[in-house]
Image (cartoon, rainbow, N blue to C red; front, top):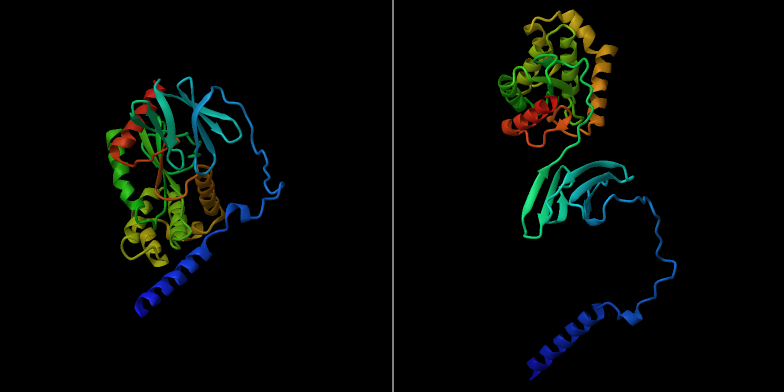
Length: 293
């Protein structure tokens, strides 16, 4: 009997604690003040077609609107029309990847379609080192960092693309030393100084080799300069010259304007390469060549 009484007492005590933890009933909650809610209209603009569905990129820069005319309209958040993509007649819904580089269409039957979309960036490649014919119709631009462990692996891919498209493609190198790589910025300046003597690509290969070996130390860079036959005195003078600093700053500005935030990042005639595989890049090259015809 005492055991039952003790158990019942514990149950009542526990029940009382649970009951006391419950939120107050709605009628007991304080009433919201009439002026507690406020809002401000940030943007207002008219769409070209009656919306069926819409979604906005995670960074808030692009709005995708599926119209009842079976088109997906792309707008900036200020209402500037950025482009139109045709959709199948039965399309009823749209979605996108976080940055808006992939568009997903769904129709009434449950069919699903994924589209890779991109906006071409105006990338200044004047004065940048390149391989291939100067007047090639396609520029494959790579933003790279000599200390980045992934960047050296892109070089064989570039060689493969060049071999397959000798008259169509030139590969252009752009510097983007990342802040977390302490040796990347001196290495970039070393490559620019070597370019001044016409030996950028020799230094390019030597720097990546050093990065995977002894490291991009000052001694390793000096050794590379001597090994590829540079005028070492001129090289050391150019290493920290205003002209070298200016070239590097220009590439960094170009990277920022192209919204490059990591390395390696590739562009085909200004279109970002989202899938850096030989087949995906070749498809983009073929599309760009077809535009020239």
